[in-house]
Image (cartoon, rainbow, N blue to C red; front, top):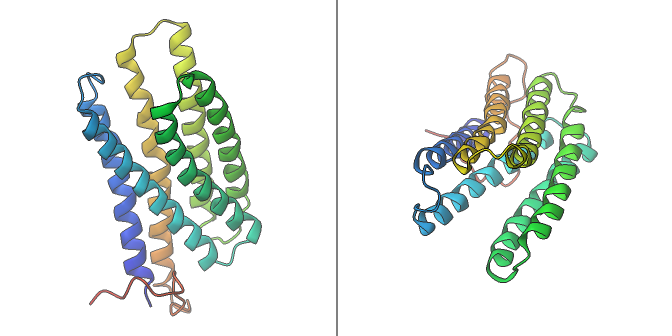
Length: 209
């Protein structure tokens, strides 16, 4: 049974994502003075941890036999997130009219988040239902904040230094994911629970000694 080590890896990935976001706030006091390579490194690590968290959430949904429509929503979002970040790197180097690009992609990303949020509310299994509802609410708060506050700050002529605090909300979805992973681990300890079912079919995470 590989569920415990798998969820432990998932929790570590979520905590690392939170830590990286906090590091961004700490060293981002002077965003233009920050080493560009360090920024790329942290951004890449943050995205990698985020993708790992999403993959584990997808596996949890499969583990508890949730509807295919819910699983598909998370799968689509994972694929979009991968291509979105690759495209961002390419566009950042070659495209000059970034305002239009980021406006269009931000709207599309927001709509996709709404899709995932809606499907998260449809999770039925009692072990993970509340966790996914929390994930949906915090993801929606994060998406709205990241999309709306920069525009509001611009209208109010709030200084650039305040912008970095907007992204503190990025720590919210990983917190909900940690709740889900812990609930998954706890469920395997309950009497009568068939704990031999692996979280990953290929058993990539072996039981800890």
